Every structure is written in C-alpha cells, then in structure tokens.
Amino acid sequence: MTLSDPNDILADAFADLDAGNLSSNTQAKSSSQESKSESRNEFSVRRASLGDSMMLESIDREAFPGMTPVTHIERDLTRQNGLYLAAVRDWQPGEHELGPRFAIATQSEKEDDSFSAKVKRNVYRYLLDYVIRPKLPPDYIAGFVGLWFVLDEAHVVIIGLREIDRRKGIGEQLLISAIEQSVENDSRVVTLEVRESNEPAIKLYRKYGFQEVGFRRRYYSDSGENAVIMTTPPIQSDDYQERFSELVELHADRWGWVSRLGYSRTESPDPTIESDD
Image (cartoon, rainbow, N blue to C red; front, side):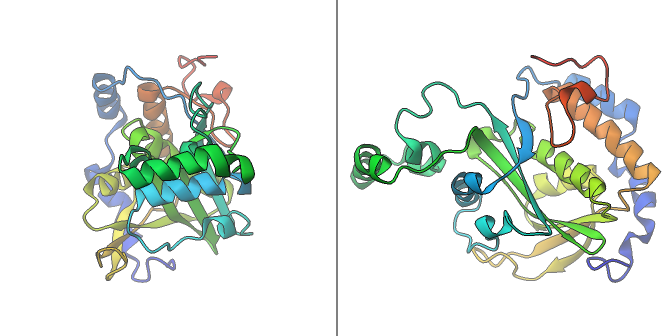
C-alpha cells in the first residue's frame, strides 16, 4: 500500500498494462517511424537552481493562467526533499535585444499590443533593466518539472511548458527525466495529479504506466475542476524498467537523443543514435 493508493488499486497494474496501455516494442517502433519528426530536439535537461526562479515562475504563469499558485518555486528549489529539472538550450541571437524582462515574460505579455503594455515594456527596457537588471539564467528554459520525494514515493508537483515550445517532445522528455531521477532516488512509485479534462496529458501518463487511482475534488482554484490522481507500478521492477527503456529509446528516435541529468549523449541506449555535436 502507498500513500497515494490506499486501496491497493495498483495490485493489478501490470495486468492492465499487458492489456494494452503500453504498446509492444514492435508496434511502438513502427508507429514511431511513421511519426518521426523532421525537427530534432535541441533541449537538454539539467537541475534547476535559484538563478532560474524568475524564468520558472514566468513559465508557471504562462502554463497555468488564473491559477492560485500551489507551488512555491523559489522555496522548493532549496527544499531538502525536492528536485526541479529544467529543459534548456543556448540563448539564440536576438533573444536579449528587448531586455531581460522581455526575455523572461510570458507569451501573452510579449504579444500584448495595448498602449499600456507597450509603455510598460519601454519602461522596463530603457529604465528598470538598467536600474535593477534581472539576472537571466545561463540558458533559455522551455519548461520544467518539480519533484518531491516523500517516503517511498516520488511526487510530480508540476510540469510546465512555454506555449511556443509545446509539441516538440519536451514535456515527455521532462517526464522521462523525472522518472529516471525517481529511480535514482530509490523511490518505489511516482505519483501526480492532472486535470480531469486534460486528456492529452492523461494519455501521456498512461503511456508511461501511470494508473488512475482516485480524485481530488475541486482541486484547481481557477475552475474548481477535479484532479485525477495517477500512480505508476513499482518503477524499480524489471518489467517496468524494460518497458520504460523502450519508451526512452522511441522518444530519442523520434526527437533526437539529448543529455539529461545523469545521462549524457554518449550513453544513448541505441548505438545508431549519434550526437549532433
């Protein structure tokens, strides 16, 4: 029994997986070849630090507009039992031109063409960015995932992505990294909450073996929507590790192999996948 599965709903989890929640290796490889992306993933995953907090908070606002914050990112970055991971790439030429506050801003803030928004951006650019200049992270951050480790469980607190960086395999890449770090932490299972209406996310989590084990009523402050509680089978088991390795390989085949915390490009599970360096 786990904290997130008091009724032992996961007792038959592997039977459910065998029934089809995870595709066989052959079927998944065929599907991956058909949908292989022409755009290769340029993002790696590293541990987030306090210097990233302003950009992570901006991503949080962009990914979850209208939400009363349930995570305190700056505090969690120093939490003894917490770990935040960021999907990053090098800053591109021109991304600093309008100043650090603009570089960190949400997409809606950047696209706001109202008179007041333009005045605000100019005040930031020509005054505040020089008087109190925010320190940008060393690299551009597209998204992040936050983990808490409690007893034998790893709990995914948040996964947030920039709107402009969605549908690039980055969210799945962050989930992979979260599971890898949970394994490294000797966690037995990984748990999370997801909006009841967020079918794409639920589908992704099921792909990685998460099972629906309960609800949190009116969990989301912006809409009062329920949260679905999802939990993996034991992630240290040979069965889960075999399936997980297949999915990691398929993700690398579709999007390109990139470095993740503790996993360099030279450690690709498929020797045919080479570094772009």
